[in-house]
Length: 257
Image (cartoon, rainbow, N blue to C red; front, side, top):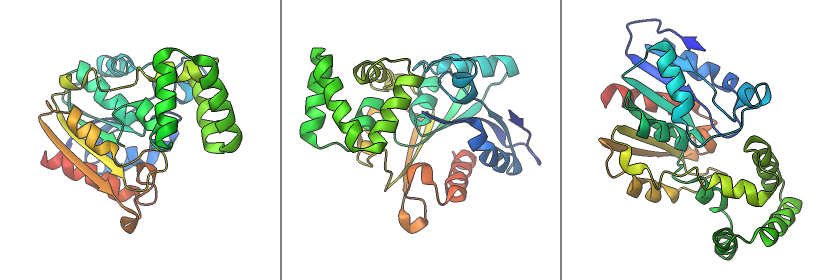
């Protein structure tokens, strides 16, 4: 979907969501960016929205593939890419492989999906899951996650959706697939201007992952990190509660960068 700037054009934005998003969620952000002078291309890729549920295309960690299709079709260059939630990994990943992207906004702190998945578990549980993954012990991992699903509705939703969207038959297979969703082996290829916008009370993503992402993005042309808080009504995941502040922060950064 495309929204054209209502005034003098300030630039071009590619906008997309994350793990469980529909692009309809981003209609108002798309229109807000357009009202503030940007041409905006809102799109879904494999594993998202209608692409998943209508075309049955499961998630790929290679986000440069759907992004390239948009850039090629519309003959775009010199763009800013904005990815929300898991898009905080997907957008930088696309930028690593396509230099038509000049600026990157990660609308969440997302250096590594596995780290995000287990970051709020107690350390003994994190160590156990990591050990079982590294040693290929699937049965105990599936048993552990089954017990966690019985006790925690958020874990249950996360795993059931994940197995569906990532084409995995078991929790262990899902975990194995999300290990590909990491910036750790490609971060050095990200040479653009980067903004990471996080939320201090995010129920999915622990703020300490800021440090991990900062250390990874050593070759970024510039790196800006901003953590919004509950005092700003923006401390929840993707700054829900004060989306205007988040969008204004992105606009100001794009204009000044």
